[in-house]
Amino acid sequence: MSILRQLTKRILTAFVPSRLLLTRGPRHAPNKRPRLALTFDDGPHPLHTARLLDVLCAARLKATFFVVGKDAAKYPALIRRIAEEGHEIGNHTWSHGDPVMTSPRDFLGEVHQTDELVRNLTGGIPRSMRPPKGELNWTKLTGLWRQGKTVALWNIDPRDYRMSDTGEAAVWASRYQPGDGDVLLFHDNHPWAIAAIERMNNRGVFNEYQSVTISELIQQEMPEMRPVTSVQATASTP
Ligand SMILES: [Zn+2]
Image (tube, rainbow, N blue to C red):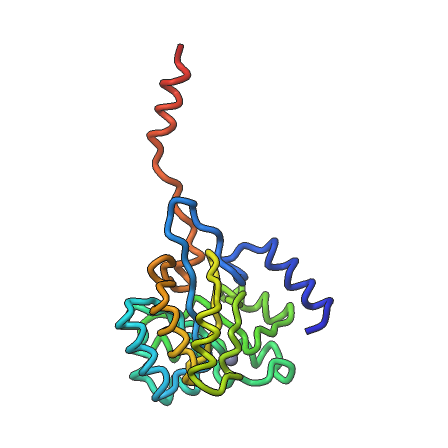
């Protein structure tokens, strides 16, 4: 990515609310349990997604799956299972085409096509969208915003698609230092995320950090009801 594009991305993510463009979730209140979002791209995959769902279920973790429409159409039962088990389904286009070769019109058409499929399968339309490779131009970005989408990028990338065995995934997971609001990018069309999640779970990451979906991560906290105000008012009364 060019320096200019990196800079544009940094400026955008600094000033645009996270419900429109997310790379990392907002910091949580200091007295609350910190949170992180596990995200899985490029599925569903008949073997890896099913095994991953078993692992998430056993560890009681919630995640977001950015699904490719044409594969979702091939494995509808997995899409229903993802939704039924309380995970969030995000949109990752229909064909996962090369962003440079895909016009804004085709791109937005693919997003709509995937939305419709997910709606037919689960009754809900994905609120979050992740463009393939995180690549967007202004027309695509504003088009997604007009559709009410949260464009969900990430701030932690283990590059699991480049790994070659479970040992590599476990090493990454042993070294990962979690931060409040982290959005982790994994891929469920590869097997390695499963070992990484298991290792993170075994070392107690999810005892300290709550694993939440993208929508949960960006939800603004309701301001607390304040008996504090009345206490202050009372205290200031002479
Ligand atoms: Zn992808």
